[in-house]
Length: 125
Image (cartoon, rainbow, N blue to C red):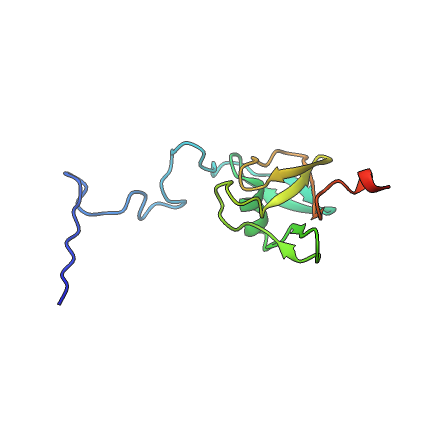
């Protein structure tokens, strides 16, 4: 039999930070504010976002799981690691390709489009 002992910090009572509060751990750096939201567009459709929310998080919340296609076979891709390491979440934001959607904060009025291949189709024309 294996026994696992979990240690808690003094005064924490073993609770998880943010447990029982809507939105989890409120007030942490980079967290989405539950205040008034705004919209940006994704492939011409409106998407709601909260201040401080990344583009990837807003797209996920809207049910969009893919916003890039691979260079060779055109396979769909979206967020994979969620921390900016893997580059699967690349999107074209306001006409600029190769933005990691998991790192870019959504802003009111942004225009986000699905990135096809390497995002530089205009170089091949």
